[in-house]
Length: 223
Ligand SMILES: C[S@@+](CC[C@H](N)C(=O)[O-])C[C@H]1O[C@@H](n2cnc3c(N)ncnc32)[C@H](O)[C@@H]1O
Image (cartoon, rainbow, N blue to C red; front, side, top):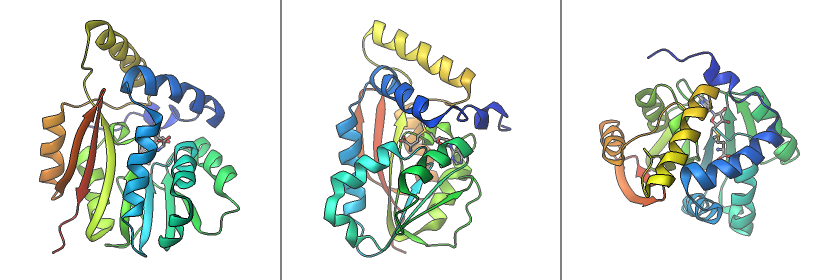
């Protein structure tokens, strides 16, 4: 399916507005907790032993700054951090936040065609973004390509709404609004997404549902 133009412009609101809006989306559409996200993505970075880390679709960097804060001094174990996003406004927000940090490199890139050599990263996070990618098979295989053998990808996937009727109704409304606005491409069934990651060659290390979110840690096989 062709990417619709609004799927990039949806992220062109100011990054401060994106952060406020994101909080409501987290509570009502994901039905998740901020702490769960921070600790989940932090844990993936803790597994990094002297390699490079990729923060894919970093957005304005708000969540990632919390992950780094929670990581504290253990961050020093990560040799290099690279973050990318394809939306200018988001990247500007991230640059304001991390621009002075010499150990974080930020660039504009589309996940479907990454400007990195094969096996560049030991760990990668895709936080709150994998369901925004319009060509999921390509995105999964690009991230697989740039992970080193044995490398880990942590991601959370927005599922088709679950839970009580009223919760499903509310999440469905927000998701439909997000799709119109161009900030959500689609939601998934858990099994469907697991099939996609296995087809892309990943091994599933962690597979856990919280609210409407599927939390996955995926491994590029060692050989
Ligand atoms: C909901 S935001 C999440 C941002 C950040 N990871 C967070 O958790 O706050 C989704 C991000 O994905 C980015 N994005 C969507 N499609 C992309 C693509 N094809 N390539 C790169 N970034 C993309 C958007 O620009 C946006 O910043």
